[in-house]
Every structure is written in structure tokens, then in C-alpha cells.
Image (spheres, rainbow, N blue to C red):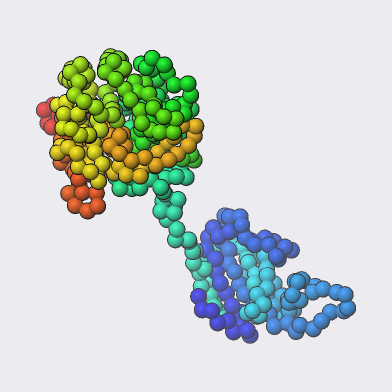
Length: 430
């Protein structure tokens, strides 16, 4: 719209259907805020009323505050336009800098805005007649606030590196049960509400308070912290369910360092396998152990999928066992067949509703467990360990800052394609 308005002519600006309602003429200072079902037009009139002062102690008759008055000519023009073109005045206000008077008219019948513009444009006193375009802010709601309302999401660089937001449009881990063999977990943490469905302890003396569950709570948060709860962070598989098997105990009050032994791990592994849980996370490492290796191997043969934290030496438990999926940090190659995950300075949970950063292959294992939960959820829990490894291996990033890392979205896309081909083949057989 042209910015120059000739003060001696009537100018017109037209508002399209559904524009916000303006207050009544008797309330000139109010602005539009309510939607109307009728189309409305905004008309401006030249308003060059002389600014003579009123009697001592008086104020402007129609517009107060700066003494800018409505001239008689503009007032009469407004009434004439309303009558001639069958319009209903709903609001008016002055614009001092342009020396004009503005009036909002409602079209009380079914005439279109275009037809009213056409009629008014033929009026010899009308200088300008055009639609008033609608304008919008250019903020991307997704970019500005992120895809989640969790306030610490922007600090979770691992999720952006892995493309988790896009992956969550396809799967969030719903229907997948995960066994977490670790220390205990602070089940009262607000970001784990509803995620931990069962806990069992296999240590001689369970921790006296949740503050001794630092490592387990951190791993649980990486895997399944609740998304879009206006609290904290987002888990990689926020709809997955966790079964916690406490087999390790914390060594120091303010340290993640924890220890397990053959006996506690054997009891926890046996219980997890007996429960039929399909996915087991072990963010731990230690020496080769025949008893534990036998338990894990038997469970793999019966369909369980294990994820372990890569460590040195090469025969470290559990990742040296054939069939255990190994995870390592992208910054440190520990095992030739391990999958790389961002594992440096990763935000996660701490007991008592707290949050902090964590690093190491424990983190990588928990993240990879979350990614596998997404694949399982997308497939309806029908993926074997071999299929999972194949999907991950074929879609591993080969270039860029995340080279060596799994590509979650590529794996989900390949899985979807394979399932589609499988359905088509089944139909052909029928």
C-alpha cells in the first residue's frame, strides 16, 4: 500500500473477511481483538480540523490526550459513506501524523470485499482502494521452541546429532520393554514418571537412598526420559518401559563409579531372561566370565538382544560374547565392530530431580539401546539381533562429524522399506 496520503482526499484501505473485530465507535481508543463473521473495510478521511484551544480547563471533545480533534468534514464524510454504501460503522480513530480519520465499517450483508472496493473506487472522493493483506510472524515454532517442550532439550546435542526428533515422528519406543542391569534407579525422578514399571534388587544391602543410584538413573534418563512433559530432557525412546535390575552398588556418595560381581550379575541376568524382556542394556564392563557368558549366550539363542559398553581388553565382558551389540563413543575406537555414538558431555538425569552431563561408553550403550528400542517399536517387536545389526551396519554414517555413528532415520527408513516389500510379497503368495 502507498505510504503517501493526500490530505484533501478520502483514502481507503480494505480489510478481508474474518479480520479481527474493532471496538464500537463510542470506544475509539480500543483496538481490534475479536474475530467477526462479516467482512470489514477500513476507510480513512482527510482530517485537517483547526487545532484551536478550547476554553480554559477543558479537553478535546472527541480525542483526549494530545488535543487532536475530529473535524466536521471528516465526520460528515464518514456518515455519508456509511449511508451511501450500506456499511455499519464499528470503530474509529485518528492518525495525527497523517492528518486523517480512520473508520472501520462492517459489510452487514453478503457482498464481497471486492465488490465494495469496486463501488468505493468509483467515488470521486476516494483516493485509494485496495485489500489489506494479512501478515504473519516468520518464527518457525519448531525451530524457536524445538520439537519438544522439555526446557533442557536444546542442551541435548546428542539428540540433534542422531536426528532423534525426526525419528520420533515414526517411533518412540512404545510397546518395548528394556531391562536395565545397573545400580538402582531413582524412580521418583519427575522425568521418569511412568517409565520404570518394575525394580528388583540383587545386592546384599540395597542403597539407603536414591542418591546412591547415580549411574542407573543417568542411563535410564538417556534411554527413556519422558518427552513433552515440560520437565528436563527427552529420552531417545521416551515411550519405552524399563525393568530395573539392581546388580551394582555405588562406591562413593558423589561419584558414578559403581561395581557388580559375578554373583549379583548372574542373578540379575537370570531374572531378566526369565521375565522374557527382549532388550537388555548393560552399561558395564569387566573381565571375561564363563558363567555370565553362558547366561548371555543362552539368552541370545532364545531371542534376547543385548547391548554392552565396549571396553579394553578385547575379551572384556559383555561385548566379547558373540551376539552382544557393542557401543563406543565416537571419540574413542575400542572395538572393531562397535557402533559409534555421541558419548562426550551428554546431558542426562541425576537422582532427586537433578540433571548433569555424563561421558563414556556407558552413555554410548544406553543411547544405542534407545535407538534399538525405536527400531523394535517400529517393527512391532519382531526384529532379531541379527536383523538389528544388519540395519545398523548398512546405515552407519560414512562422512561428516558423525562418521561411524549409526543413522537412526536411515535405519528406520530401510526397515520401513523392508516391511513394505515383505507385505507385498505376502500378498503375491496369497
